[in-house]
Length: 451
Ligand SMILES: Nc1ncnc2c1ncn2[C@@H]1O[C@H](COP(=O)(O)OP(=O)(O)O)[C@@H](O)[C@H]1O
Ligand SMILES: [Mg+2]
Image (cartoon, rainbow, N blue to C red; front, top):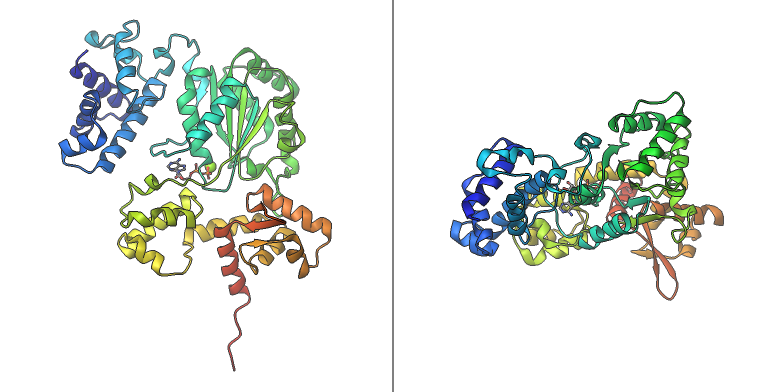
């Protein structure tokens, strides 16, 4: 095995994906990794920064992972690529048979028999940058691949990284499924349309009635190992009411999700949502193969490595301030670059909590989704310090006990309120959202000017 063979194979894989050959930097990275060099050593050889090399390498591993249908990274690159080259059944560099393995994820894995066209990931985002989340990926692996859980929810605030995490999981585990279909409910459709769509991807002619079509679908779920991902599931729920309540026209989905959990089959459905679905609560996780994963913030300073930021010693503080939400952090990084020329310390010295226009827009949508009781509660939260007791919230609000309790529970289901157990039970409104609520309550009650 020579480095030229390795470069040839990598070049063909990259070309098949991007219609562009490896550039000099990519070639140096592959050569360096083959020679067992660290990113720092490769960076020194090429006269570039280590973070740039890391970044380009990450994009390269991502392309190679997609092309080979398994996760490729710096530590397994040499072994995997060597294995592919040696696997002469699939690849013969000499006469260009390499094309046979391009884009056919399963062809490098002899165990796989499935038909590529039973995969539809056209609506799934491409993940180029990905940091941390090792434990969450391991959890998903365990739940879905080892324990065969049939219904798995990935939950958390908007922008926290749910879609990215699940796509990463899918990229890494493609070969384990015969059917993979990714759909988003951003523009939700009826359950029947979704079922027809899934059957179409599986090359099935749809039967007459919805019941028969559902039977057809569950027959596929039983016969083959399928992974179906439904993103943005919260769009099935009513806005302006407590969290997780289905709009009447989407009520069927609830029965569908229940059936996925209750019926015997070998497939899994991943639901990605900003609001917890009621199925997740009425089923006992010990008795049914269902699980839910709450996604916390991403507290990794590497996140800022690609941004043009200074003052690395303050990065973690900034990440904590914005609760590790990658969308907020991206927004703030751009703002610090544009206004403070990348100086994080100067931005922090401003000493006022900045909520960008994009964040305001997203919080406004979130606020509008709340039931009126929840809106009253969050406005009340904003009058107190970071943590508040139930009694304190009750004092100035004319809410019955039932409304107060249900309101708090609904806010928890949206991941806007967390319970903190000290010597007594306290509640905390999500700190960044709290700043937004403080700002809007000041706007709606402008301070009276002194005469
Ligand atoms: N682990 C991660 N590493 C790097 N960037 C991430 C990560 N998770 C999310 N992001 C970035 O944050 C943004 C929001 O992520 P997304 O998955 O769309 O959030 P959600 O689905 O929870 O709304 C995306 O642009 C994505 O690139
Ligand atoms: Mg998403």
